[in-house]
Length: 80
Image (cartoon, rainbow, N blue to C red; front, side):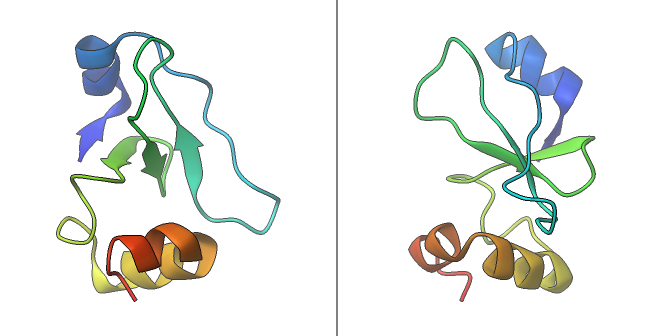
């Protein structure tokens, strides 16, 4: 987990945070100049890396939200 500022310092400019639909609780972004890095956020302040932070850095509540909003990634990363 890192802040948006830390991510920008390490990876450069990020795409704007976006959600997949109004019911989604998860915000997504990625570095503009790096491929294969996928970040998501619950609060638009702290970013989680799909590949390195799941499932260890998530609370049980966050895991539940993630599994509901991102079933593909949740299954791939063994959250569910």
